[in-house]
Amino acid sequence: MDVFKETKRALRQLEGTTSIPVTISCDGDGYFDRECPSEECKFQFKVLMGDWKAKVRDEEVFCPFCGHTADSTEWNTEEQIEQLKQAAIEHLRSSMGNALRRDADRWNRDTAESVTRLIVENGLQNAVTAFQRCVEAMFSNISSAPTARRNAFQNLAEGSRLWLAATGKAYRDHLSEDELNRLNRSFQQRHLLAHTQGIVDQDYQQERRYPIPSWPEDRCSTTDGPRHTRSDRSSSHRP
Ligand SMILES: [Zn+2]
Image (cartoon, rainbow, N blue to C red; front, side, top):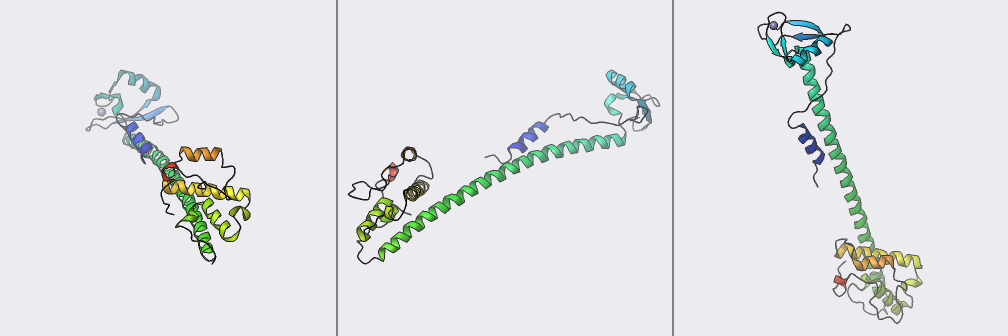
């Protein structure tokens, strides 16, 4: 991501010659000030705006006092030169300022988005891990419970079967269908974040579109519980 995209574009636009419209004011009678550019003369005089515009077409202008000739762009007074400078600076300031502001806004927006995503993803992973640790700890307090393999409760269906064996009640006896589905979805999402950097693969998409209808297969089941992404199906899980 180019943080200074807009600013660089504004700079490119300023390269070479940039013309800025500047209004030089004339007095109520339509006259405005001119000054001879010759260092020895510096004669100031007034000229009708209409006359000046006609002269500008000739490009060369004669000083009425010393006869010095110079290009029609050379006849600004000190005050007018200052006005032109200020206009150029203001133009620069506003075009750069706007570009910098657009860059800063975009950067802030992008940062806010990624921070929000990190918080949500982190929260999801923490909640799923907390669930896993909690049922694991509760399960280990049941004296008659069978020994569970390490991280067995990272697999919802396997955990549910263990609880069924130890207590006669599976997860679905404690949770509604909707709660089970949400739990399952959270575990799948945590799995994606932990093992595929959150990249949604085909397995995941298919499950999204077609949620496992009979989940979890608590009784007399040979399945391995909720489907995992292909790459991870046989490996041991880390929270
Ligand atoms: Zn002169």
